[in-house]
Image 1 (cartoon, rainbow, N blue to C red):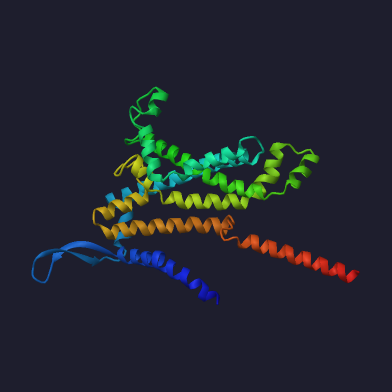
Image 2 (tube, rainbow, N blue to C red):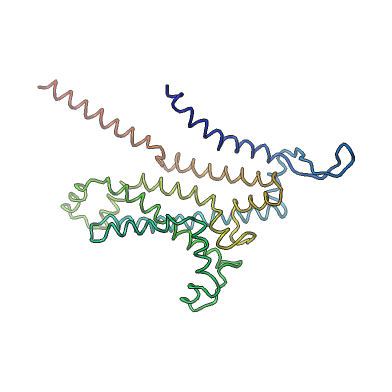
Length: 310
């Protein structure tokens, strides 16, 4: 019965995830080459090259672009997720306090996250123009959308502005389930705000925070649309693995594009495994369900013992 109920979902996942993945792995083993057909005319043919496309990722011009895109992807992921986590935690702490206008604050924080990424990229592109708002406020003429560190900073600012509310809302949901009696007992014991934050809030919200950080890291590793719209394609300083794979496929080099995509998939998979297995991120809620079940069994055992004693 369980297999029958899950079969529609498994079928959809197989069609939209498993098949494209296997197709990409198969395509990465081939390369378009110029050859002669049976009639002696020059034509493009797909030749089996094995792991040659993967070997090219570390040598020559292709290897240089791959390592640059890999470094950019890692840099953007680590930087943006760290800033989003800090800012999101601050937003959650602010929204968790009781004050007038709290509902308005929660609703307004959702606005950046609700804006489509392409629209957000166009908005920040307008802000970071040479004669835009950013340069007017700074009194400078920084070329934000050209090559260089300024373009990296522009992408980081736009990404943090958009996705920090996501972490903030998830962390807020984790804070809402912390019993108020815990804080009251801590206050009676003389614990201040910082002590409550370090000893109560952060430890109890850690499972939710880990899941939020994991989701954001997986999303940031696949970053494409924001730097593509904000800075533009072909910019070495902001080119990510997704943008590199798109550029290769746009040049009809589907073998190398598939190799880039497969490497990105492996990178994302390794990060997910580290978070789930090493850091203990409870993505499916299985640990929480196990804890609740164990607590229920202990309570039932105590109840039976009490009844037996009577």
